[in-house]
Length: 141
Image 1 (cartoon, rainbow, N blue to C red):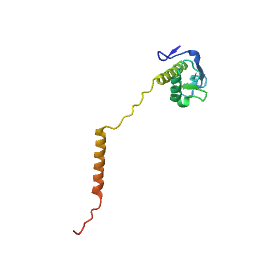
Image 2: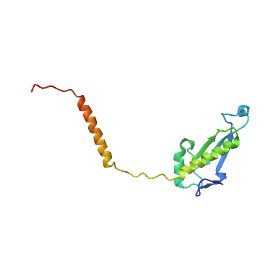
Image 3: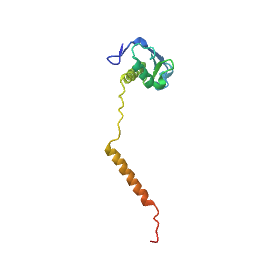
Image 4: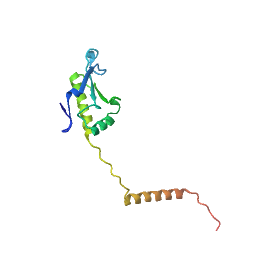
């Protein structure tokens, strides 16, 4: 069991881990040992997630999620397979935690009187600057 929030607990059977060869650090081991981890989590069919969390997670994941609703996280930052595995799980946990937070509702506001006055004062200053640039015509009065 993976505890994400008090309300969200994911069973480890829902996560599939595949170990692949990493292109990064590893020295002579890089061609022999599969240290990179590819984590797959079926967001679309997961019983652990509510509909709101599922939709926010799909939006947050972006290109990491397939058209079938499977989230793919690749971890190849470390040289050890176990650390990459833990890194992939940690990234999944952070992503789901972020998706579980309800977005703050935006409250529409109108500009205050002081900000309107500042805007008008700035416009007047600009008008005066442009007025001073005009060519002055001399009349024969």
